[in-house]
Image (cartoon, rainbow over all chains, first blue to last red; front, side, top):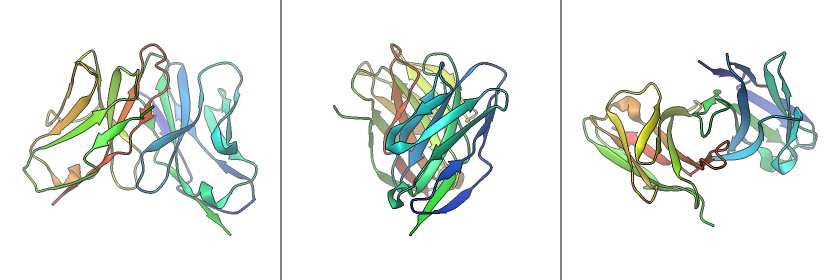
Amino acid sequence: AQSVTQLDSQVPVFEEAPVELRCNYSSSVSVYLFWYVQYPNQGLQLLLKYLSGSTLVKGINGFEAEFNKSQTSFHLRKPSVHISDTAEYFCAVSDTGTASKLTFGTGTRLQVML
Amino acid sequence: DAGVTQSPTHLIKTRGQQVTLRCSPKSGHDTVSWYQQALGQGPQFIFQYYEEEERQRGNFPDRFSGHQYPNYSSELNVNALLLGDSALYLCASSSTNSGDTQYFGPGTRLTVL
């Protein structure tokens, strides 16, 4: 079985400051890792994904994440946040099969303040 | 190119009733997965359909059932609704040819009274 832990339920940050959202996972098999963003009353939008290769992956809206196999982590970072980044962020894991089910964390609410 | 679409947007039912939610996958996608997202929680996998058959299933009771049509669209049916079934139901589609990423629809908000 796989699991995802997002320790921070809420992260307040001032606009233009850097931010890191933490994600740790547990799995007995090789995994794919994903970050999705959910704006109020909307579905999930893919920010970025790690499948293989370079451990630093870049996504949309200036976000990036680093896969650390030894620490089983996949933390999301942005060097300078904007008010429009206020949303719920979900980390997810799947095994490496085709269209495998996603296991999500409980989410981190990023609140960007002026 | 239309993304994943779901209908209806919102739905209100009473306990014991049955509900059907619908999903049309992104163009070119042949696999549909359904997730339940309770308030304040991450999405939970219900099941996945491919070639009109249930391929994977999460830890949900038999009250939750589904169907996939030849055009790849899908339905989620929930019987004997409970208050705890109130949630956002998300549909995600993917392609077996490039199946590492699932694309989500806007969801259907189900409220059970």
